[in-house]
Length: 491
Image (cartoon, rainbow, N blue to C red; front, side, top):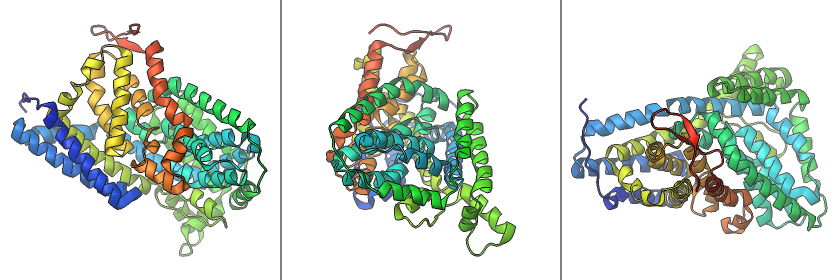
């Protein structure tokens, strides 16, 4: 195919698809609420792709074949990420049903003490979200239980929600099971575990400051203990076989990650290992999942397979615990995969039309130094979070907009992937009309603006990203001729 020289549209024209997308998402989210990701947002993306393609073909004279090729290449580029997402669905089901996550929660709840409630809440939610890779699941399950305990102990609901969300989004940001983590790394062409390790430079200090603030707050609060957490732990113990042997699964997973085993292999081994532990420690739960229609060995096999791919519901006698241990398996990831494919269509059309290049040219004047580059990326990510009201699309748009600029300036892709997560993933629940903000406020029954001042981790992370950039710590430039990493310039 012949290369076509694309006439760059003006920045004003280039912003038209963005404005159309924002408008469609605004209406979609107002209409569907948290269900907007089940189809409405995808249709909005495809409709905006059509608008972008129409403008490109009529104004910039771009051939449809060029746009189509860009879309296919975009989707091909995230193919491995889509496979990882399917494995993540499998591992989320197997870790829960095998008792790995319930065991971690059970022992984690033993740490709760009135004085250290806020910091313990943050830590427990962080552990659960790292293990599950989902902030939404963490908040909607253990988060609700912790909110009830905190209220009984006399804590303000804004503080409790802030601790819950801070911990939950810590895991959402760094867990290899998190779809946002996988998405940010894949969009920027950064190996998953390289992305996670590099994020530790900004994430660990942000969480450390957060835990210090919650600890100090606890010392100034007098509260009485309650029985809710004891009941929660008892229900876990009655429903699952709780044993330290189950810690083998996360330990093995951690070793594989430390040895830099490829993500697909690591997650697959972890999922299979958890499945084996389910057969050993939770056979009754597998039979319950299989249902009454299955008998004998067929029932065990049916429950074992369903654990990996399907939705599961376990009756524990505790409504909150029922929500916690429910899983969606591989099938639960199909909505996210659908969204990513539609977003890749939009990103491909924007790139092929030259609109992304036109918009990013506006940022070049602020990107003469590393801190300006990172600061512009943070501002862009926050801008898209506010405008598109969705963290997935904000990650995709930010990554696509700055990918070429970072390459031209010689920055490693991991700097872009880290900055994107620092700017987008953690700020999404702080915006009232964002799908994350709306969902968390609805689940917890706490207004977004009420918990916003106490989401220390979410507020500190983007600032920490800019601060680290200003120091130049662990930021390297790639030499144009030798492709060799060299220390970054001083800021």
